Structures are given as structure tokens and as C-alpha cells.
Length: 354
Image 1 (cartoon, rainbow, N blue to C red):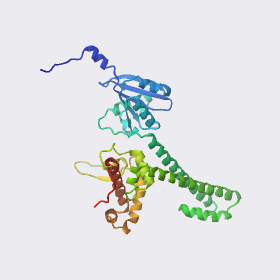
Image 2: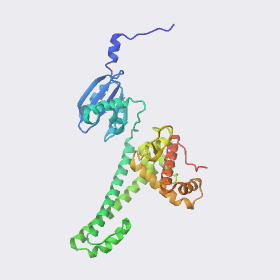
Image 3: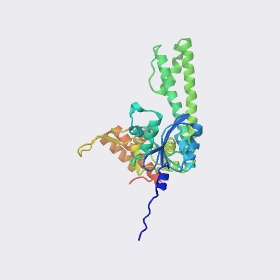
Image 4: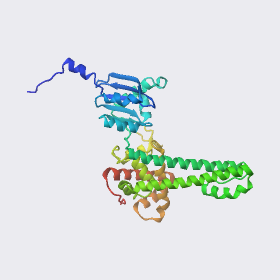
């Protein structure tokens, strides 16, 4: 006969004082904490915790689920919480805001922490993978390189704008601007010629820095076997491989390749009702930088596809003729994302589809 055990009132009261889930509103100096017990009752509400005391407060707590928004410094805090035995879970801020009880008008640190605590307990919530220090270091290279590219574009546009004030209109192509601007400097007045010369010298310096960072990414790709494997996919080079690997790791946070494509915003949005499916444009959710890299790789695949006879090239050419150039690019990028997930999650090598 099974023995029936009952919880004494003393044990029940002890259980009600144990924090099982806690939400933290991250900030620069002052953090807000909201912790609940197994019944969902708030038993730890601290709207003002300094940065120096945050780890001390969390060390005193039993191992629990810690919810945070994916923002600046969140990955570092998550790594520290893992060392303390907690289970950190990060969410996109847009998924947390619907759980703020007071809505937009009641936004403050305490309400944000309560909303984070509520959101992290939802069974359908989607979480952000925790990045390692090496992955974040690789992403630093990508962010710095992208910043140099944007600065170079802005500088070239500044050259075009200044020269147009003197009736010299240059085309938008960067190489043409560099070439024709040097020739037209002699037609500018003194100080205008000096500024344009300095701007072109700055563009040349940025070209050198961008080339240098390209070499850094190639070195990172050579040192990782996973990058070498996924670079065998047409349209995936060192930049795309290292960026995706740093962002998703081995892809174990996604159930399948389509989830990765949806996370990158490469799947069509839906507006379905009454059993009738209506698909629209791609959602463009997730990281714009990763999606841009995959689209650029798809452009390379589609440009070289007519000269090749493999299965992917034939499929790309047929798709472009049937659906159009833009939709073909998105489809190729989504297919590459799915193949990358399969190779990372299963540890397989690339095989040309039959």
C-alpha cells in the first residue's frame, strides 16, 4: 500500500519563502529585481540594487530561473549567473513589453522587472542563446568592420555632396567617385580642394582598415572547423560563416532549419483567417546584418548559376525565371540558412543536393 505523505504547515511556509523565478531589469548602475515563489507570489521586490551588490544578492538566493532582456551586457551577466548555479534566460524586449501590467504609461524599472519575471515563465516564450566570450569577440570584429564600411559610405557621400555645390556631379558608384574626384580637385577653389583631398585620404585609410578586418575574419574562419564546413555551401564566405557561427553557435537553440530562417526574417509573414492562408512579404525580423550577408551571398550564387550545372544552380536559375529575381534571392538565402543549421546541428559536411 502506498504511503501518503502530507506537507506540514512549517514546510509549506518554508516553501513559500523560496524564490524560484526572478526577473532583473538590467541597467548601467541601478538594477531592479522581482522574484516570485512556486505559487507565483512576489516575495522579493527590490527596485534599487546597485551594480556592485547585484551578484551578492543573487549569490544568497537558491538556484533559480533568472529572466533578463537581451540588451547591452546581458550575455556577460548570464555567464556570471551560470557560475552561481542559476539558469539565466534572455528574451527580446519586444516579447516582454506585453506583460507589463500598467502598459506604456506605467513604465518604470520595477514594472519592467515584474514583466520580465512574468514573461520568462510563459511556456511558449522564445529565448536568446547565450553567447560565449569568443563568440562576442568575433562579433566585435564584425561590428567594427561594419562601422568602418558605414563611415566610408558616409564619407564618399560627403565628397559627392561637397563637389555638387560647385557643379561637379559624380555618380553613386564608389570606385568611380574615387577616380573622378581626384581628377576634378583642380577645378575646386582652395579650401574646397583641401577638404575633398582630406576626405579622399580618409576613404583610402578606411579601405585599408576594412581590408585588414577582412583578413582577421579569414583567420577566424581558418581556425574553426565548423566555419570551414559551412563555407563549402555556395554563397557562404568567411564573413557570413563567422557571423552566423558567433550568433547561433551549433544551432541547438532551434528545432529545425526553418526556425533559423524565421529567426533571420527570411520567411513570409502571414495574415491568414477562416482557413485561408495569405502569405505576404518576408518578416525581416531578427538580425539585419546576418540577413544582409545571406542575401549578398545569394546574389553571388544567382549571378554564377547560369555557368554551372549542379543541382543548386539549376534550381536557382529555374526559380528566378519562375518567381523573379528578388524572390529567388530570398529563397536561396533561406535555403542556405537551413543547410547551415543542418550542418552545425548534426555535425555533417556539405553535400550537393540531388
